[in-house]
Length: 508
Image (cartoon, rainbow, N blue to C red; front, side):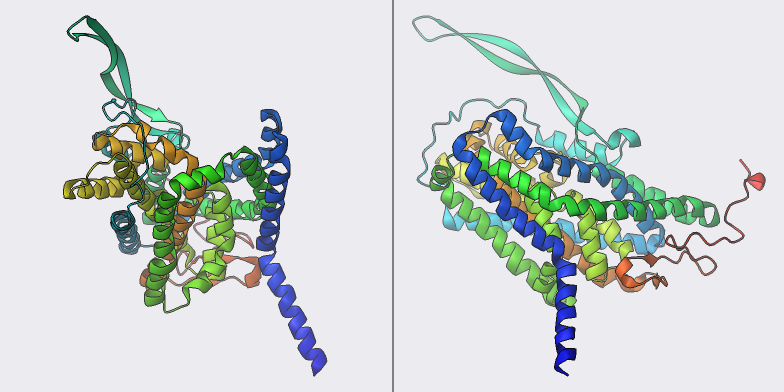
């Protein structure tokens, strides 16, 4: 009896290690990265040495980024094709309502915390508030670019760039007399603006186009089956490749952390000056990510939210290192579908959409930053300013380009609307690395919780998934297209009267 209990305990421990081996190795890599950084930093390494320290981490991020666009396109097309238009509308509408609601509530929370804590009071700044801001996008142009990117004019170009309004300035000389002599001053004047491009993937446009292709192919029924089979197979192939690449995470984590420690300077002085600001942001993020969102999960799913958080730790680790929920998307799919039994048709549509425009943590950070800058300048914040900041933060988060430092770009835009020069936000760059990781983790928690809530509301209205005869631990599910044809990518395509199609009788 004792031997049976020991064997059962041993098997349980082995199973737990197998399930959490990647997390354990990543945590060990974090410690190794910190150790390397602390040992190398006092030696003041050259820029070349720093580059090679961070090279494995850079290659790790590039590998994952390489697979994001094909994964998003294939998974969205394959997912939407399995739902009828009515179900597609329900899933899309529910997810959009959740995203817009969470993006709206967090700036209100940030405004309340900033008003109570007042992080900017007592901090002196020598910023000239009369100086004009250049090369910062105007609010109306952000909204116009959002609409342009929703409807891309070139699908291929959307894979590596998105529409963005550009400005062309010209120098203008102004001569004034101060009473004793003439003073010459050169300023920048807007000459024209035009629609250019930014070097960033237009994920939102690709999702919209992929949804249209998926719905259109499903409407074609028999004629659309070869098209859908290709994208279903491509999705499984990409996920299999990513499941192998993800095991390089510990190496990438150690490299990136070591590089960050080596290049970070005057951390203590920075936190001493901006401590209350960082505290305000972190209190808001913790309250939202670990109280509000878990409570919402508990009410809707009737399950332990922190147990759910435990299943997405690998995704959290990737976000901590890369500050991108989009890069963590492959691991998020695995956690949602295989550990939480989320319907893959829902996860592969809602998760990419949430990763693109679901930025609850970022909006909270943007709002806190704006109030902090206003308080450091000694300006009184009236009701109109509060409403303007909250509304602009809410909407601008949907349209801001998906590039490094995007949240800080949004802060500059909001400051421009309040007639405050962008130099006032320069001090925020000192804590950008730390706060970027914090808000990205909260973004991830909000996004994946939203996927689970949409699954709760919408999964019952979807046709049932049928499990393949393969064991579950091989992560293989079969989607049933209709009553006549069942596609199993793992065992090969079943052939019927419609596959392969007879092109001889096709009318052009």
